Image 1 (spheres, rainbow, N blue to C red):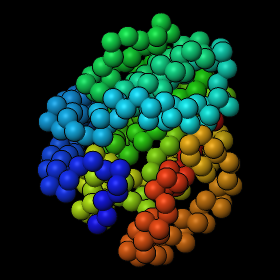
Image 2: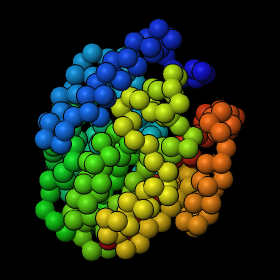
Image 3: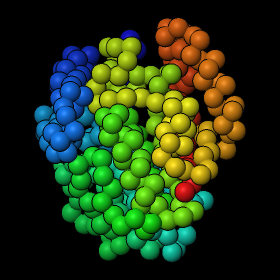
Image 4: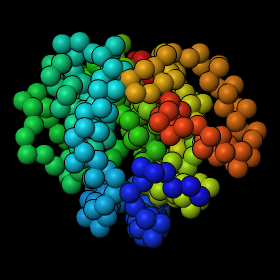
Length: 281
C-alpha cells in the first residue's frame, strides 16, 4: 500500500472512511432495482454528511485546483461544443464545470443523485440541475447535442449503468456525442479500495476497460465509437484495435505487476491512463 503525498488523510482516517464507504456501497450492490431508485440519493447524501473530510468536498473549497481542472476539461469539450449546443453533464459533482460550459452554449443540464454535493448559492441563467434516481436521464428524447461524464459510470450498479447508457443514447440528437471518462479497471482499483483491496469495494461498484465500454456502447446503439488517450485537456484519438491490444497484454500480467506499472508512472500523469470513449449517435 502506498499513500500519495497529495492524500491529506492519515492511515487511520482512510480506514475509517473506507469502512463507511464500503458499508454504504454494499447497500447499493445488494439492493433490488426498485429500492435503488431512491437509494443513490440517500446513500451519497449520508456519505457526505458522515465523511466531511472526503476529497470530493474538500476539493470544492480549493479554488485554484478547481480552476485548473475546469480549464483542462474545457480543452477537451470545446472541440464538440458551439454556441447553439445543448449540453448535459451526468454526475457533475459541485457543478463547476457545467457552470463554465453555460457561458459557451445555449443550455446546460446537470443530472446528479446528491443534493449535498451539488449545493450552490448562485447558478447561471442557462443552467438547470436535475436530481434523479441514478439511472434515468429525465430530459426529452433527441434534445441534447453533447453529453459528458467524468468518473461517473463506475459508480453505478451494473444493471443501472447500461440502462442509463440507453437513456443517454435516447436523449442525444442524431449526430450528438456522449463523452465518457472512467478509470481503467486493469490498473485499479481506483476508489478508496486501492489502499486495502485488489478489486473496487467502495463506491466504484464496477470498473471498466475500454473494451468493456465499447461493447456496451455498441449494444446501446451508438453508430460510431472512438477511443482517446490523454488528460489535462490534451487528447489524441487512438485506434480502437490498438487500445484493445494493449488491454489484452495487460490482462496477461498478474495484479502485482499491473499495480507496479501504475505506481511507476508519476502521479501527475496518471490522469492520462483514464479510459476515454466517445460514442456518436
